[in-house]
Amino acid sequence: MDNKDFLESYEGQSVDELISLEQEYRIESIVMAFEEALDQKASEVGLSNLTDTERIVLAIEALEREVNNGGYHQFFSNSSNEYAVMIVKALEEIACPKTARITHMAIGKLEINGPLTVEAITAAIDADEEGDDCLLDILSELDDQYFDSGEMIADRLFHYIKDHKSQINL
Image (cartoon, rainbow, N blue to C red; front, top):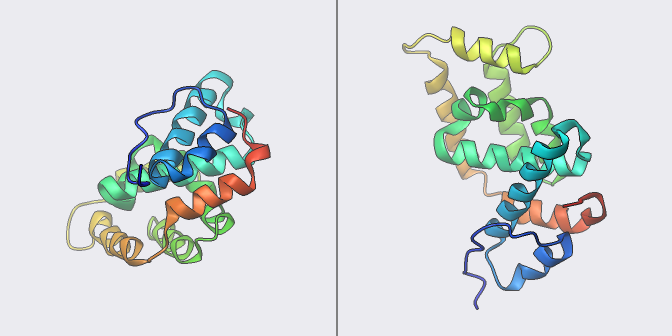
């Protein structure tokens, strides 16, 4: 195989077994397998019972999935917004400073007065009115910056996973 094949899904592999697939499968698909395994674990034990490292993997993958499918607006509108509080720090942790800066700006566009919470994000999204300065249009400019950042987020996340594998339990 030429590292172009896509790992279809998580099938109960250990952390080391998933990491060992690096030469066989696309990194993005291995990272998605980690996300799938950690989502399963979170549904069993609760998100708060995951390690910081495990939550970082889930936060980064949520951002990637949502922004790639519908932009920052979708990230903030869906349940993935539960990761907004930690996402900038998570991006910095995996060595994605450009994306962290862009994401910080996107959070700032929500114009939340007070603590950043799921409730505050939802209220900001719900209060947005369509028009020339609607939040969707404002955030779409940051979506473009996200796509143009040049940071290989999946690769950096995979490197982070390898460096912190002792803190991940599937």
